[in-house]
Amino acid sequence: MVNINNQNMKPYFLISITMILISCSSKKQISELYSQSQSLENTTFRYEQIEELPDPVKRYFKYALQDGQPYLSQLRLKHTGQFKTGQGKDWVDIKGEQYFTAQPPGFVWIGKTKVFNARDSYVSNKGNLSVYLLGFLRIVNSKGPTVDQAELLRWLGESVWMPTNLLPTEHIEWTAMDENTAKVTFDWQGQSVFYTVHFNEEGQIIRMETERYMNEDRLEKWEGRLSDYQEVNGMNVPGTIEASWLLEEGKHTYARFHVQTFEYDVPELFQ
Image (tube, rainbow, N blue to C red; front, side):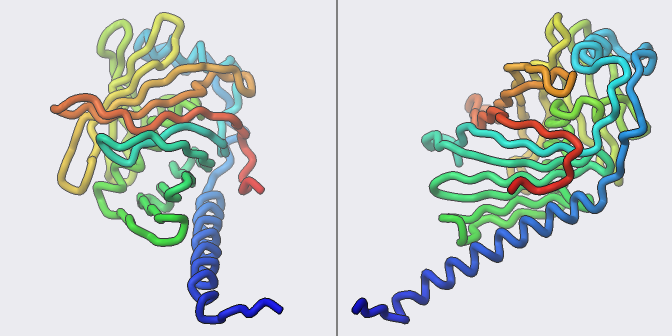
């Protein structure tokens, strides 16, 4: 007969309970995200909407969208990739899933590695980053105005996966810079964020630059590079995103995500 020491089992029991609570918290946040989502399925994109936009922006929308494309309401995706927790650190493999809403803007991202799990989100106009060591011990719980700005910027930048998000509205404005560059500004609930967007001759967005908070009091230049465009649901979207800080001491690339699955207007959790 195997003798099980209840005292030795206690830490494992507590870890299991903690991980269940974390999972429930993520599901609750995603449910909240989708419960607020407004359906845009009855709105369609037409090329005449973009006649007054800067030339590289028109080129992008004609590349990314077909005339008559319905506006997207939600997106869920899965990705693989690599991640660095800091300068000088080694790359670690990461898998993630992400849930987006177009209106109001929002997302929940869940990433998992062998060492840590992370949840990044913008829900109900509030940003949050939580990191759990070994899946259960929370070591980061960032929130506040600078996190709100960073997460709203993430939503705007990753809207290249939902191109109708980037069409001009009362909240989104495109400004000409030169034949291959334009500035996009998004104003939402008193917060204003922007990117300088670089396009190639084909119309692809290949690079986006902005300033975002690296921590509460440190605003730094940031860059996202986009590649591996593919056709999904009649749209052309990038399959790979690479994120970097452009620091005085040099460029620090910390994330490379490769999307494996795109599913639009399915407001449900992956099973």
